[in-house]
Image (tube, one colour):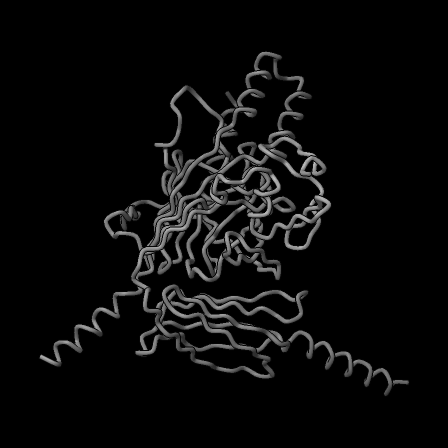
Length: 241
Length: 180
């Protein structure tokens, strides 16, 4: 009987540090970006006045987007929460993206579930951590920077500086979108167009509430390079027609 | 003259080696029962704030690896549900170090945190609803409750010791003088 009790204690301690959580994020378009875009479109002479006005209105009434990040020890799933969206026609969002992301730490894979290209594997970002830190809600956050390389629909590469504030005291290596791989929970990500901020942190939640949708082993996964190729081909095709 | 050149080059080489060589600090992070902790994070913060912060996340065998310069660092080891560990180190050669973390009693509990504010380069946005009790009569009373904010007798506002130049209330400019 004594042996049994000892075994039970060891057993429970093995399971007590379940590293899981649900993080709620809110993304908003940056005011500066909004202003710049409106200035640009005002100058554009190829667009008619009425279309201009419509685009300006869309930008001025841009709404935030809401996302959730669910994770356990090895994987995470990041997706948009559509339930908070008001249903009244087309609204401009935050520009922080629509796709869900599945991340597997064991295979080092970050896979975007893209509406056009289906599953696309994303390259992990190379983070530099600075000495700058700040307290957010009593949580010490460090500043990390990186550069994201993107491919435009016009068929050229461009890059964007990314700033992430993360909290080392919460040892979570997952983050929103492909902004993961940092030594701590991502509290905020800022890029030229948008800012993604954690609004609610829920650690060790009821296991039943975790929604992680892994990418099946036999699913076809496209590399980022292949998608660039496809975009270039599509642009070529459009030019011809 | 030739000799001088040689010594000069030698000196230069030595000097550059001194400043650029990196030493590795590696080992495992385990709990008190010697079970490896994977996804623990290590942050090596240099005492010289101009130097880069280095980090490592333990793999599924609890292993970590940090490449450090020969300068003093403070290394912090974090793993949720365990007491964090901190130590100072200055490496002159590669070193291995195994780290044992102690479990916290309350590690099983669910933790829920609502985030009341947003940081934006030079602006901090507070969601005041989460911080006030409703008994505040003036904006000054509200400001005093915000973390890091201090209001002096003359109505000057500082946040973490830095003077506030502009304040927005509901995205509209608010005159600091109007506080009194």
